[in-house]
Structure formats: structure tokens, C-alpha cells
Amino acid sequence: MTLSRAFNASPARLAAALLCASIAPSAALAQRTATPDDAPWYVILTGGMSMVRDPSVTLGGASGQFDVGSGTTFGGAVGRRFGPSLRGELEMSYRSNSLKGASVRGIDASQASSDLAALFVMANVYYDFAPIQAGPARLRPYVGLGLGFAQEVDTDLQAGGVAAQFSGSRAAWQMGLGVNWEYGSRWIAGVGLRYTDAGRVDMKGSGAVAAQTLGLEYRALTASASIGYRF
Image (tube, rainbow, N blue to C red; front, side, top):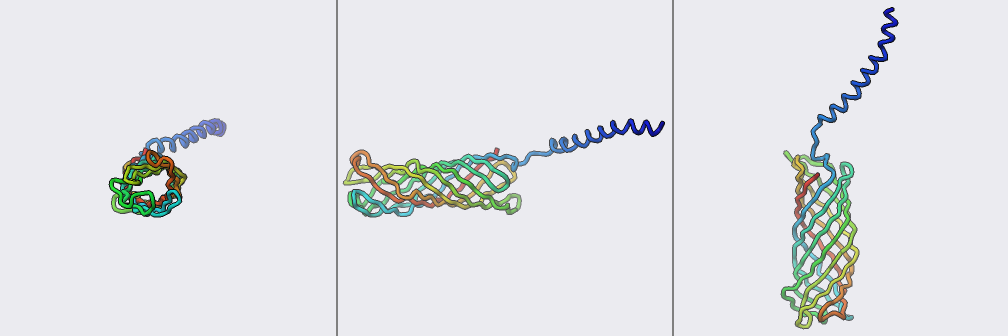
């Protein structure tokens, strides 16, 4: 009689044990507090300094060089993390540099209030290295590579004493490195360097130089600071 009762009760006890085992992990997971690392998406705003290598230029069969000064850059990006170290983002940035002079026939040697500007749209992939603990914050060095488009490269300058403008577009690539600060919240900050190369851009003239094409080699280095938010 006792053996029969024990045998009949075993399935019920087994079911109860399995139910408790399945509920316990779910309850523990529900009680876990979400951390900033659980947020895969992020937005970033950047701003800093733009340095364009003095470009070689051609105009109407003549060749020479532009003397380009320092400038500024600003932009933003939307990205997503894929695992602990890999992330991708879509970035838009604008760079503007002063144009101080030119050594090509057809363009005034001395330039006043002239500039060389560019708008880039890039798809970037970054690798984040293991974090380095620094007091209450974590430092995360990174490297990255991007491909995209110089949506518009344009220059406003003086040619023959009158205002002239040239503009064009071309595929571009960039590589970068930097470090981000993570403070245990959804906010992040960082600094970084970017090298961007659009190669030779054929820029069509407008206004007084509408029939001319300016060929220009665009290569730039930017140093910027950023602030972002993870969600």
C-alpha cells in the first residue's frame, strides 16, 4: 500500500519540481537591472578641427596647387552595436577650410574670404578594444574603416577678380581611431582622428566659370570630440 502511494505521487512531485526549475531563471532574469551595455543603438554628435592637405589642382590644361588653411568640422551619426566589440554606423559630416591662395593659371594668386568645403555621407564599421578601467569610468579604444560618398566638394574663390564657384562629388573612404569614455550611464564621450580620402574630384564651374572644370585632389585629417547617447 505504501509503495503504491509513493509511485502514484511521483509524477506530481516531478511536475512540481520541473515547474519550479523553469520559473526560477525567469524570475531572476526579470529582477536583473538593465545596464547601459544592454542598449544596442546610439547617436553621436561631433565637432572639431579639419586639416586639408594642400591639393594639386588642374584648370583648363594648367596645373598648380591650392594653399588651404585650417578649418572646422561637425557632424553626427546613428549606429548599432553587434556584440561586445563590433559596431556599425551611418555618419554625415561637414568640413570647411579657408582657401588662402592658388598657384594655377586662371585663379587669383591671393584669395580673400574664399573656402574649400565638403559634405560626406559614410558607412563606418568600428572595432572596440577591451575596456580599460579608469576610476569610475571605462576607456574603450577603437579603430574603424568607412566607405561612402563625398556628396559635395565645393570651393568659392576669386578668378580674374570676380567670384567663382566649382563643385563636384565622388566616392570616398576613411579610416579612424580614438577612445570613448563610458561613465556607467547611457551617455558617452570621446575623441578621435579621421583620415578621409576622396581622390581626384572633377568640379564643374558655375557663373563666370560655367564652361570650366577644376580637378582637385581632396585628402583631409580631422581631430574631433564627440558626445553620444545609447538607447
